[in-house]
Image 1 (tube, one colour):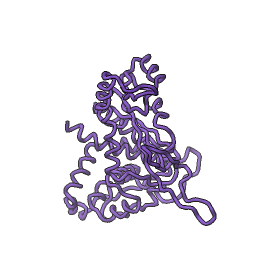
Image 2 (tube, rainbow, N blue to C red):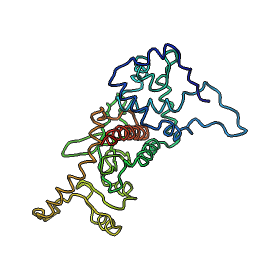
Image 3 (spheres, rainbow, N blue to C red):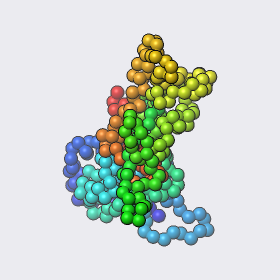
Image 4 (tube, one colour):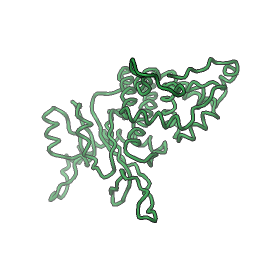
Amino acid sequence: MERKSDQPTFVDAAALELGGPRTMAFLDKCERLIPWDELARSVAGVFARPAQGEPARGGRPHWPVKLYVKCLLLQRWFNLSDPQLEEQLRDRLSFRRFVGLGLSEPTPDETALVVFRRRLREAGHERTLLEAVNRHLEKLGLMLHTGTLVDAMIVEAPRGRTKPDGTSTRDAQASFTKKRDQTYHGYKAHIASDLRGLVKDFRFDTARVHDSQHIDELIRKEKTFVGADSAYMDQEREARLHKRGVCFGVIKRRVRGQAELPAWQRALNRAWSAIRAVVEHPFAWMRNMGYRKVRYRGLARNELDFGLLAAAYNLKRSFSLRGA
């Protein structure tokens, strides 16, 4: 059973214009331009009622799903942990108004957010909100279908320490990898974007899995163009895509025994590089939002976290694309 919000009071009306102007302007834009009811419906099943004939579940009514969805995206836009979000919801009028809480209403605690994310994972909703966001962007005509760009980013995890009994506190599902002679420990996010940098799909895996292992899943529906860096160079893949009529815009590197690339290939590499650079934009935004290390232990938790981050990025990116 869903908790019902209180009716706005005179105090709520009096505080309507209070709050930081920049934050209020951004959140007002989010309220107007994002189809919150549609996003909430996509994951509402996590609080499904018992089937007919089954006894009703006990316990307190849960918070509205739309409130939870707004909270999860607030965390990604403002780089907030669960305790930080709870504190901000208690302290910031603009946040309370945005999620639909009156001044006299109680505030969801961090445990409620933990439970909601667990329900999302158990229901297999790692990509559901991103898919719902992308359907909305499709309706607006913002998602391009002129090609797919692919890239991967290492997201580090704590390396842990060895305990006196010889066991380690390290995340068992994270792994080590090397890049440019530097060792990393953690996970790797693989994304497919359109030519404007909107994230179309993603895969989240442990760090040791090579970049090229997920590209075929990410481009399976592509009919026009695939762009990527030289880590994805593969003659068999290129032949398969050409057979489908797909342009293989992957940067080529020298192969064994080749002194240097011919001039035409270097020129083509520069052209492909200029196009594929757009796929770096989502990762750059995520790093600016503090996403340089994973927040959680375990692949499933961090996969859901990345899916929420990608949805938050696409929504914010769509605002600038609407303006353009």
